[in-house]
Length: 343
Image 1 (cartoon, rainbow, N blue to C red):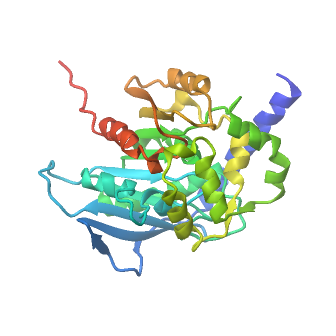
Image 2: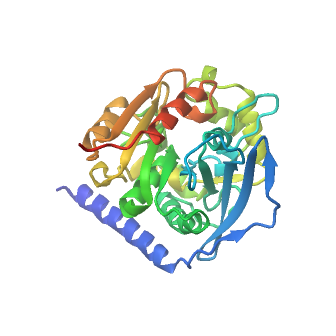
Image 3: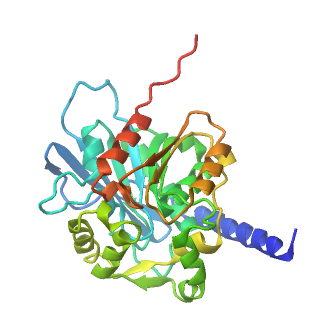
């Protein structure tokens, strides 16, 4: 082992030990309904909750259908959505685009019969604004604080998950450390090593700037750039505008922690330690990873109930693209896979 390898191992162990200490410091989560009145629109009811991570307030948002479409008796299956580096959970997963119907991931799956949840990580959306860089480790601790809320409200400890971009990395680490809470999960726009991926190489080249501050400013132009990066033809121009209109009312800066992690601290997820069923969705246009690294990760997943799906006509943020229904179709099929029978 080289001195560099030893240094990287020590650095990685230190980060995870720091994360474990944060977990021990976090206070017990108690579900609290937000002051906002529950809202019902288009047959979907929305609720707000709060979790505590030490002194940090974490915003949780839930949507489910009020309609009974002849589903199975008992509680609805819970689906928890984990957002990425550049915008909040409610902003990205419940986006309302003026004049453009059906952009809400949460509404789509609520109408499919799921009890759909998301959260805003620390320094995003409605959650507490602190001086933390809100890195992957911080996001894992956010999930650990949020899931007891979900369990208390729904009665279900083990739920299904979707993670997007750095949210998929957060989710992967969470699944390694809390396997009993994860039934099935989709890793979308995931990065394993990042080696050779154009966007990750750009961040590595810019690492000194990223490490110089815990935050970078955000703007309407910045949201345009997120969607223009890989293939702008895959997104309606009204989408980044609607997302910017929502996000900029809540935050003027974005944490750098996940960008730093994705640049120099990969890999953070060990595929051999993921016990649950995994579906990996890969956009046709995505500079955050290469096919080779993702197929390598997929090959190491021990649970043979797994899928790898590359989807044409979408880019990095597939769930907000023109062809979002294609990735929704893949995910719905995976989440509703019939159970295996024995003879």
